[in-house]
Length: 232
Image: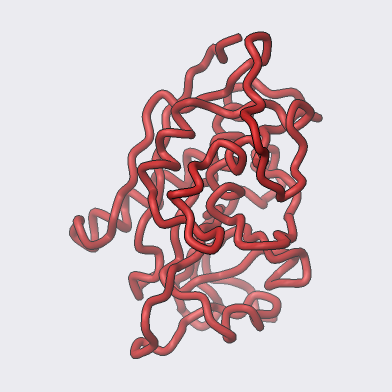
């Protein structure tokens, strides 16, 4: 495959310390995976996580009010924002099993890793140029959770570094949360966003996909600030 005209990514050797391994979700748990990985990257950037430590995705699943879900898909982003502010624990305290806890796992002596501020930016509320610039700036700071508006059979069939660009007449669905990790321009001059997905390593390029940049496919994205001293 021809070389990209330009490419910036947290996958590159000098930056990939903020990324964790690609997961294969057993149901639509993307709404917990991507934000947990976003929060994890911020704490990792500030050297507040050890090399073998990572933040619990399961804790976010367990804390989500069932009324905020429909067939396990997130319908209430405010509920997710509240959970991110309440915080999660280390993976070792609550390992990922994709179940739903009957009771809270919260304990007085467990350290919480929380977001001090969480903002959700929407493309429909911003000028295209401003939205694009803020999104790129945010990705440079850390991998970020974002919403892809449409996931269809073409998306699920992506291989290698092909760029996802659905039919513009296709109806918007419930969308899919993923972790944006980079951006660039491919050999054909097509601008793209890069994301770590949660469909396993056989999807896209080792679990990373490329999404056409100028089509408003990334409809929302999160910007977080963290507590630099996690509370015990």
